[in-house]
Length: 124
Image (cartoon, rainbow, N blue to C red; front, side, top):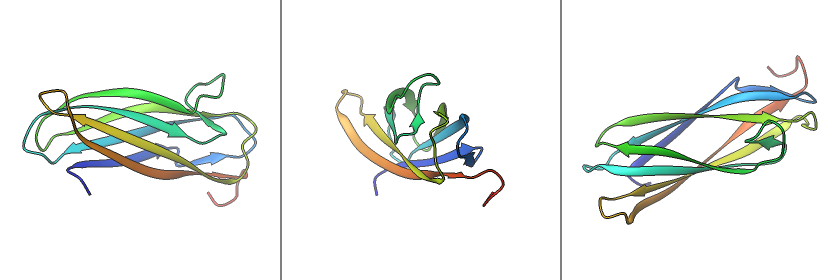
């Protein structure tokens, strides 16, 4: 594993099947290097998850900014579903790009997790 730590948290942590859902995906990034890095990330979600409320959008990008040594930063994006979601675990992936002072990529890190979608009242 590299020197950039990635964690995630989804609220609510379980989505309802057959309904429109809106959830907050919190991404936590930690710089374990002893130098300042400039970071950005891509977010990839599987259908029926979307990064837009009114259409299917599977890939997005967000800037994290400068990460000082031993610093943690949190970025939050919204994730949506349309009513065509079924009970299942839906995967999302965060791809982090960390750049050094010269603008060269110092590290590229990937992190994947799932969001559980259940029928109303079951497995919550």
